[in-house]
Amino acid sequence: MTVEELYEMRDRERERLARLRERIYCCSAAGCLSCGSESVRRALAAEIEARGLKGQVEVCGSGCMGLCSRGPLVRTQSDGAIYAQLTPDEALWLLSEDPAERRRLEAKRLDLNDPFFTRQLKIVLANSGYIDPESVHDYVAMGGYQALAKVLTEMTPEEVIEEIKASGLRGRGGAGYPTGLKWELVRRQPGDIKYVICNADEGDPGAFMDRSVLEGDPHRVLEGMAIAAYAVGAQQGYIYVRGEYGLAIQRLQLAIRQAERERLLGNRIFETTFGFRVDLRIGAGAFVCGEETALIASIEGKRGTPRQRPPYPPERGLWGKPTLINNVETFANVPPIIMNGARWFASIGTETSKGTKVFALAGAVRNTGLVEVPMGTPLRTILFEIGGGVPEGRQFKAAQTGGPSGGCIPAELLDVPVDYESLAAIGSIMGSGGLIVLDDSSSMVDVARFFMEFCMDESCGKCIPCRAGTVQMHEILCRFSRREATRQDLELLEELCVLLKETSLCGLGQTAPNPVMSTLRYFRHEYEARLTDREGGAQ
Image (cartoon, rainbow, N blue to C red; front, side, top):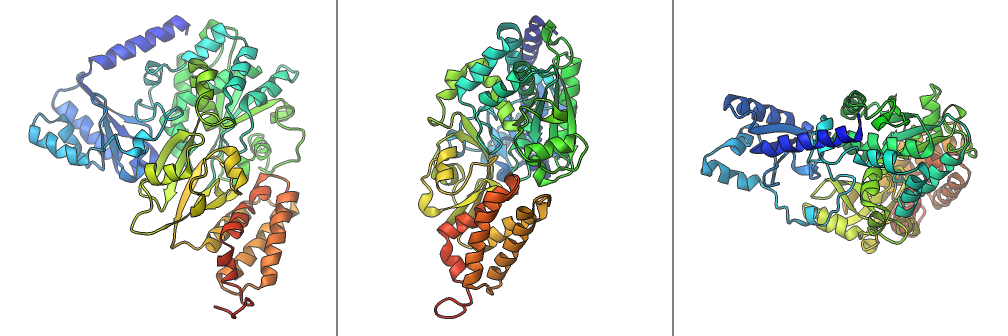
């Protein structure tokens, strides 16, 4: 495909869509599918056929529209309205000429002036809910692959890297390492063979950000990877995705086939000398394979265990070659940065944390779902304005960020800005974007025990501090849960937190104590209330 042919495809699809009287998007992300959205889509498709409306009205799937707690969600293109919890019969009212039936739909129509919608800023999720994720033509109509065309025909690899560096984009997988600097490190390595890997091994309990992006906008990730490959000098890419993400895998496979068919992947992309191929590798669900060296070992067909660093993957990665690893959300940010410019992206967020962040809101909050906000947005805004607060008359107790590697944030810190440095200062981390809300019915000791049990089960066992330390910490936390712990147990628990953090081989063991440390820091009284040898005797 040439650049001219790309623009012709874009214009043809835009003209086709403009001729439609209506296009109806039924959310086909995993959350809404579980609520019956596919039956809604089939009912609409059958009714369109029965009424002879083909060519005038069209129904298709879409990516996540965000408000997962109100699914299945349906959006109409003509007025942008979103309808919640529609049954197949109610969805047919969208095709009705009867004013009474149309009025009945108003009770199902969401208020787009609600803070859930108005307080968000969507960059990564800009296409979700607005394109059919199974159509490359839809993606191209929204400007897809234009960023790749731009870098291949107008920019040198060095200019691409400088643009990413100037944007201030940091890795969205949790560590927040400057993306442009990582790309530059790989670019500078000698050798003709280099690799690009997309880490889609999202394993945090309650997290579904990467899964939703892959389900709703897979071509965006492929385009970001291709731009990165051009910048660093790679010809082969891999997407390492968890086996549990069946729908994401299905749509990625389709997107890769479509991109290859249209010559957007493969050899001589846009008639240049650049070629890039992407293959999938399916993980078996090991949490530790989210760590980059364990992920590399798994792709190579070995047991997924981490290795000592340095050397780091940019120097010696997949099959010993220089390797760039970024996560799904990081790659999804790349095309809009190229198209809108580094200055645009850098104007969003804070001084050190640029752009937006996608969060999966879960737990004791009214509006569970997927949200995207500028970096630095106060936690209170995310939870109480966008999230709608705690339901059923309960009181907010804590927010857990960063999954098993993160920490618990108490009510007195609700106004903390959500960015890398601010969260680290209070003992938590951004992580990949899981955000679990806990109300006053939750025991923070039990929360810490749950995450420690998860880390214990997911430890690869390669290093003793993680293999044995997580077991010991879990046993102590169980004693607290049974109200059998002593003050000596409390002291030993704190010592083990430091031991694991300072001596474990990889990030799993190094961050496993974080939920314990943060709950000890902010909810120590709950631990002390369960001691058998505290003053006043056992409770």
